[in-house]
Length: 119
Image 1 (cartoon, rainbow, N blue to C red):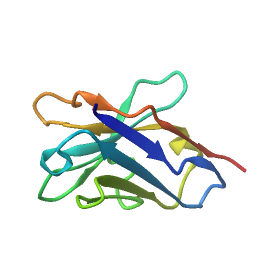
Image 2: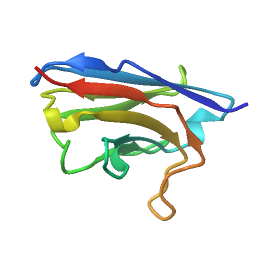
Image 3: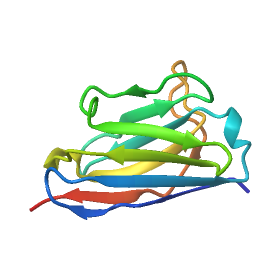
Image 4: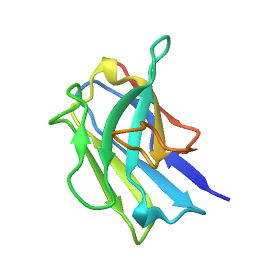
């Protein structure tokens, strides 16, 4: 049974950092492009960053230069390092497996981890 489990969310002050992790099981992790999405209250889901099975990652303009996505195929884990956090980064962050430029998010989703950026 495929499962994606996010962790690492929490409360952080503006300017602070957090590192999110997404551990995968039940899928052939290495072949999937992985992504982080986020959804703030009252707003649509937003693509934050993607990383292919091989190749360069891509970022939303809103997080470019502040966030870094990476993956460890041996550990079946994808990470999102978030620096210089802003209040507008507050959202539930979701991990997704199988994202595609053509078809959008993949079939597999985690349940999300809440990030709150506030004084």
